[in-house]
Amino acid sequence: MNKEAIEYHIRGLLEAIGEDPDREGLKETPARVAEMFSEVLEGMNYTNHEIAEMFGKTFESPSNGPDDVVVMKDITIFSYCEHHFALMYDMAVNVAYIPHGRVLGLSKIARICDMAAKRLQLQERIGKDIAEIISEAAGTPDVAVMIRGNHSCMTARGIRNTNARTTTLTCTGRFKEDASLREMVRFD
Image 1 (cartoon, rainbow, N blue to C red):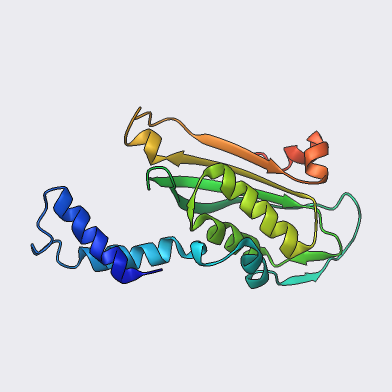
Image 2 (cartoon, rainbow, N blue to C red):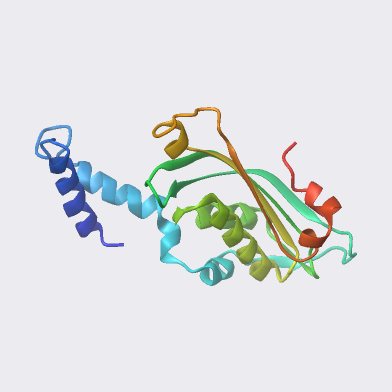
């Protein structure tokens, strides 16, 4: 990420909206925004494969039954909409997968969700990315990801509908075929 270019363009943006980038409250804003972008968009530095490698710590599964399912719910994330640079907030992710001999460390599931969201994104793509990364990291084709969240491009601008929440579901493998498995990933 080119922080110098971000600073330059944020300064230009401040000027374009009629602000004085040299006034006391804004002097350091371009640098702060550049630092913020490097943090909140960190996931843009990595492919899904690289994220799977970073957070792919697995352990032998204590059982290998075909009905064993790992479910983690209410993982908190946020992201930025690629259409408006608007914040997607109050987002919760539910992840389920069927182990095929190995299980992921639980914190790795949350870290994968966090890193996949740290990109200019669409909610639908976040779910797809998380499913792809979990599948590779855990070595399983059977993954489901449900995301629920608010989008400031809906709540703070445009239609300004503050109650609108978006829910997306991404399923692979057995979750795509079996409705009872999909129920495990639903929000309570």
